[in-house]
Length: 65
Image (cartoon, rainbow, N blue to C red):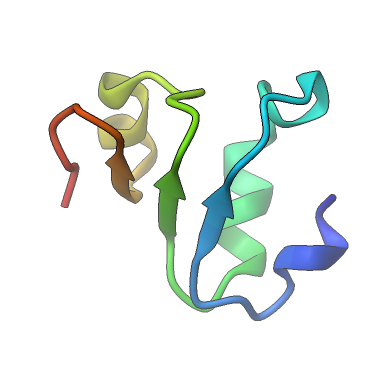
C-alpha cells in the first residue's frame, strides 16, 4: 500500500479494508509530497490526525488543517 503514495499530493480513502485501518503514519507522511488525507470511510481518529500533522478531511466531521 505504501508504493501507491510515493510522491503523492494526497491520499483518498474509499475502502474499509483492514490493511488501511492501521497504517504507519510517519511512513505515509515521509513518502507523500504533502500530508493530505481525504477519508471517505472515517477510518482515523481526528485527534490522531492533529497529532500526526496531516491535513485530514473526513465525512461529517471536522477538518484538520
